[in-house]
Length: 364
Image (cartoon, rainbow, N blue to C red; front, side):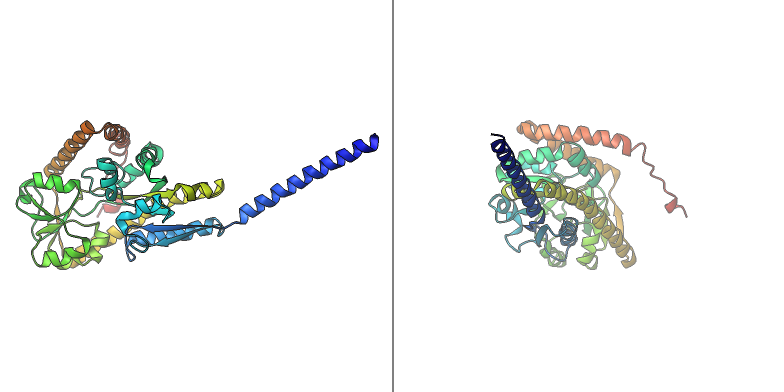
């Protein structure tokens, strides 16, 4: 009987050891397994967006020790840029970075509140990032995209304000805009029409010839870093600042749910950290590019036309009026808008009062 008990005990110990080594082996295999995710951004190669995407992919590979590979592609490489949201939903792409403005037709005006380009008098990049990561921004984004089979894990490439315009005469007041053939789109287009401008929509690649042929009198596109490289200073005499019509242009990071669920927890956490780091680096990259672009304009002799405080207030009032209209039509828009407004008012309560505006670096 005693031998039988010893035998049973030995069997039990052997079983436990076998299970322990099996689990350990599985953990080692999981730790060494490589995961690959297909990513396409919406912007083409040769842009700061593409540079940031490559940096992001390289950083993920390095920080994961090669366990997680992001196969990054520029806009249009796999699907048309405006179709990346559906491509993530259908599993054609594992990751995409659409600007929510591209999804206005999918989720409605609520897209404006998610870092959309062309949200007049909206949040600055840092205000939006704070709301997204420290407030409820990402929670709302995931709720709005719940029918697209994705998890939104962060924000990519939050670009600073665009130039207000390129033109051959100063456009600094509401009266200056009357009768102007202005290239733009989105919410700013609605406001400009109310201000008496004639809105014409052409693609980015068509702006230069359209301005040369006088199809348009003025246009907005991106910030000074991108616009200067486009050569717009060659065909216009003035740039308007600040970009009250579009203080921010940002992209969401959508991950296909199935691809996300296949990742082990440590790689999920790593990917979220890398996206946060990429948010900051994206902003810094664009801001520095804009600083270099502004130097280029000054050296070239382009005239800088400040947008009057009165016009900026008129744009903000018109934008608030439109948001109130959307809030009255859509309870979800109202919920997100009021949440974002409360957060940013609190944020500005510090930044506008505590943060100095006078700097020793500007003392001559």
